[in-house]
Image (cartoon, rainbow over all chains, first blue to last red; front, side):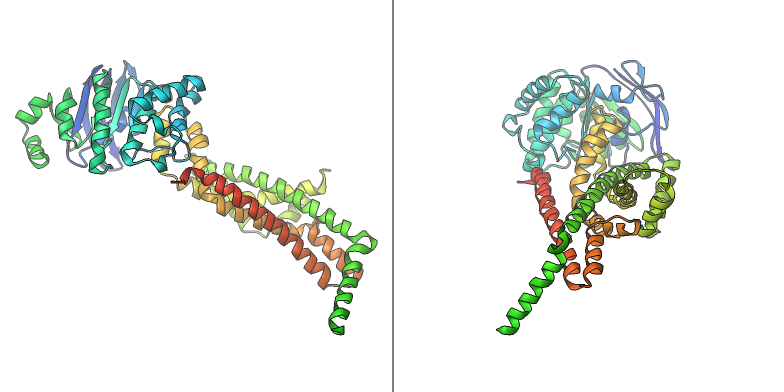
Amino acid sequence: MIRVHNLHKHFGSLEVLTGIDEHISQGEVVVIIGPSGSGKSTFLRCLNLLETPTEGEIYVDDQLINSPKANVNKIRQKMGMVFQQFNLFPHLTVMDNITLAPVMLKRMTKDAAQAKAMELLARVGLAEKAGAYPAQLSGGQKQRVAIARALAMEPEIMLFDEPTSALDPEMVGEVLDVMKDLAKSGMTMVVVTHEMAFAREVGTRVLFMDQGVIMEQGTPAEIFGNARNERTQKFLSKVL
Amino acid sequence: MDRISAWAADLAATFYKCFIREDRYKLLLGGIGVTIKISLVAVLLGILIGLIIALCSLSKKKLLNILSKIYTDVIRGTPSVTQLMIIYFVVFATVHWPKWLIAAIAFGINSGAYVSEIFRAGIQSIDAGQTEAGRSLGLNGRQTMIHIVIPQAVKNIFPALCNEFITLIKETAIVGYVGLTDIQKAGDFIKSATFEAFMPLIGTAIIYFVLIKILTLALGRAEKHLRRSETH
């Protein structure tokens, strides 16, 4: 579903990604862990071209997406993204946040989009907040709306960029629960997170990134139970 | 007591002379119409030009950056009376449009430079995450700008825009230079015709004040409406 070949990303002279090769199949829940500055978020953001790769190729459904000929907007419609800072649109109600893109991109009529939004809000447990503005929601509620907003485009892949890092501890659980449900439903997910319990429980594969490359990867049992790489062991000993 | 009533009678007589006799109030009413017409068209044109120039200055294309920089530099670096006269007597010298419309265009061009700086600051004040969220949903750059960034920017810059509109209305008091009779010029005509200074000039000031007060109140209500999404 996603194939990454020799991905490099430089910011000026700073080399953030230094050669990543990865293949993500349909239905996988890939959890990316690693220390700050290891390039996890940059890697994720390259997948939907919020960052333009300096070198290398990214294929989504066998289509090369980082070529000048690729229709970036079309490709992004297949990939939902959830941000650390939620990034809800503060001037729109929860309902309008969710229906804006599907209606504007003519994926659905307004009525259909609203029906879909109510269904998604019920799924994330926020049906009664349809008419609220983001400023009236708690952090956990905002992030659940953000997930619903991304799902409204009916994406094939969901990208999560540290979705619980900006939340108060008591709100982390409600967001992770929504993500677990989503994983169970068979959604292909790529999740950058510091929530090791989530990685272990929900992840089908764990990637450990450091210094701009994938240092080690394996099933959660392999990584958390029996990491071979010294850096992985060191990182895990600090966070577990 | 006698002195006060004598003074009041004198005031009433001057008032009559300045505003009622020979239907002089009609001159002022006409002036109000001219001021409002020019201001309204100039404000709309200023917003349009301002937005375009702001988007040019934020564009990735170097040429557009340079053009927008030149525009704001030239407009801000020259007096508005000079601009008005150049537009009227040079640029539109051979064009037979209504005088007020040409003046409105001149003020719109002038206001656009200031509005563009307000818009630019407003657009830059919106978190990059908003654009990323819009783009990640598959919206293109223009859709994201129009439906996500600009509505939020407008809310933030609304007070600064109101300020610019008010300044613009008062700036139009120079249109007498190109032979238009706005409020200021009407007051001036009455002053010359009656040899009275106090009454026509204070009258002019009061008319401007009332017009701007009404506008301020209306804009205040509009801002409240814009800020409804922030209520907790």
